[in-house]
Length: 127
Image (cartoon, rainbow, N blue to C red; front, side, top):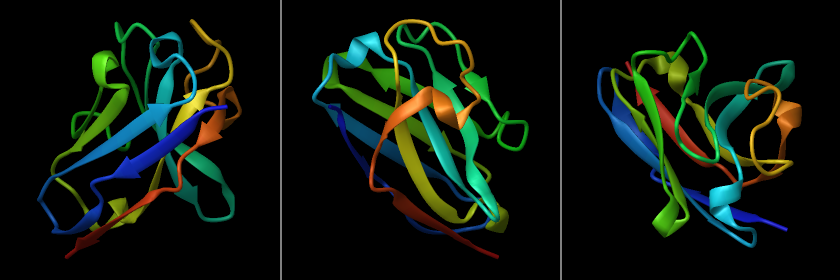
């Protein structure tokens, strides 16, 4: 079982920045891909960004590409999401997630690839 704890959310003006953190425990962090997702109205959680177990690649939703950066510090069992040029439509509860299986996964963009979730951290972007 993995435990994930997000932090770093808050209130920011449009155009501002926030850095989210996700501290993981319970499984060997370095073995698993990690992702950030958010709720989507009427749908399952929407993919935002993912980073493989080795951190050698990055995957982003088109809506955040160029503004958000995902990273991980395996020595600290922590993943980050640097969010720049924030927009009101980025307001949401952001969830970090850990992949269901270790090593490479078939689809970094699919919610079903992730099994463990944090409690979420709320981001509010004012206009």
